[in-house]
Image (cartoon, rainbow, N blue to C red; front, side):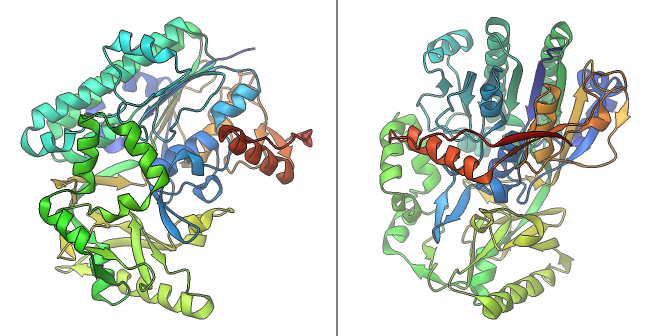
Length: 531
């Protein structure tokens, strides 16, 4: 039996909205799928961020193993902007390619440049404006022709529009989502595939800016439900299984804790004045303004090359117009460059390290805003991450209470409205996302009582194609949702690959992509067992 799979991604989707909209008959497709399929709650990664969570969905491992725990990483004692070149394990698309299966992935939000796979990829969030987004690259002209010019992200002035003209900003999101849907539908109907994965990320942008505007939220969820209906028709026609996942959930954020301001006031962090930064801030040239300018002037190729050569150029620019200082990483005991975490200075060791970490946790746990407790939970890194690359992540993870977000920007106040790109943000990420499944192998009207981890998705898809699950994966195949009469309703197979072989394969892939002589490929030491 050869079965196909559709993975329908809705970035930031939450059952809180979906359940209400189904009651109002705004999402009839989702209602039908849940009546005849399975649903569960997806637990996001720590932190519940796009880079970490989608990478875990696509690799089957936690961020401590895949190496991309946030948009900013600590690598060799430096804070670096994340990219797929820091991903240290294979994606499911590569694993399926190695087994002769074809994938079509539309709007991969965590990969640039697009990975060469057995199939088709278009990139999303991580793509610099106006650069090639497609693999194979010759497909770019076909896609642009079909959709009237592909868009990876909303136009550069989206956030400016969101401040001044919300209807125009919303229209930008609708245009991007529609182009992604048209692309995926065209490719599915005109190219061979075993797995089809359209990922819709406009829901995330929408909920950050429009969370308090329920009519816009309802309108966009209805649009996504309409797209879902078309992919459901493909699933039925192809006798395929359909999965619906989000990378995290969402909640309202009326206020923000400006964590670096708080750390500075308590003496854990040192901020130094920067004359260049002050000049840029006073002139209004922030990182976001530069990003918009680069996109408008079609200078992305030059800017991307410049950044790869001189990454410090980016760190000089202030995020906001009021940020005249910059963090002194050497003199600080702790600082935050991640929206959900705090890094400690790598010079701290042993008892001194734990003393500082415990002091920060103790004082954060007691922190209130006009008597309101602002932090729901605090975790030490080793409590929620494991793996060789865990040290790229923050030493402390912060889970904010409902109604609060956290910002790394240097604000004059510890508590203030949550801003991003000088736009007031009304919604921020939460850990609980969505998972749903429908198809010939899926039970009807089933509720998964155990939470689904992000890293359970990849092994489940492998199992649905009767492929063994690599031993390094943290997730498990969700066989409990399979019908009793399904041929797939059996124990998943585990594929054991020696760690030495896996590391050599990774080095060979990296060096090959850099144009260097590849490491000779050893014969895999593989054993297949029943799990």
